[in-house]
Length: 350
Ligand code: SF4
Image 1 (cartoon, rainbow, N blue to C red):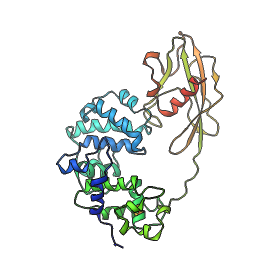
Image 2 (cartoon, helix red, strand yellow; image 1 turned 90 degrees about the vertical axis):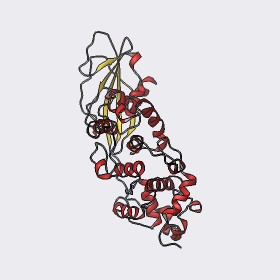
Image 3 (spheres, rainbow, N blue to C red; image 1 turned 180 degrees about the vertical axis):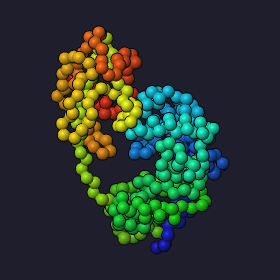
């Protein structure tokens, strides 16, 4: 058994098996001198935070078709970007995307900086994203550790400390493994290995380029790694939303405040969301409100949400206390964040 996995073995594997991604410059093109566009790398990394490759692909294609450069994005209307992001979740990312694009244009002349330190000064760019952009876009030997990399490192070095306590040790191993040669390809190769071979369940060790050096494979512990500290069950929060339809078909919607969950997104007016009972809240317009029998359910990172959905048909002359009516031809439920769209789907199903 080898003492230490060889990055060259993984790079050879990557040369033959790299996944195709709309934002990726594959190893063959890269060898021909094609360089990734830092704008596309940065956008993909922001979109991929907390989200899967499969969920991101279509959004990425739409965003880069509509705003092909960072200057195009910086000049976009906030509401257009928020609407295009609808359904991808974690909406603070969309607000930061715009902030960052405008910052790059205003402070860096529209050119992304190429070091981890400088990338870290950009809005919405934390250590992971800075490392990923420096590595993938600029071929810097930065340490890039996502869930895939954590799993691979825990297994290759047979580390049994549970996550998240194991993070520093796994990061140290990942840093020690990062080569000076082709670090950008290497970063993507480890992620690919974790996503396609060293998968959470049933790792395909027989196909793995690091098999002969993998300590967990030798010890027979691969399937149980990485260990994780059990999570506390998520609390349940309750709230009320009001779906008011005017007799001409217009819907009453509000743009949520920039701070807080779903900030800056369109939504149905309603109460705050709290544990226990939904807090007392005035309806946004005087009407005969009916309550749907079923609640809209959605799960965020830290809690489950149960929304009571109230609906009403209102005459033309009523004025709302919050929000504004959006005409039927301008209304698209696809522009709503998922929790709000689920409330609408329940209403439409009645
Ligand atoms: S040998 Fe198996 S457990 Fe070890 S890195 Fe490869 S796929 Fe993962």
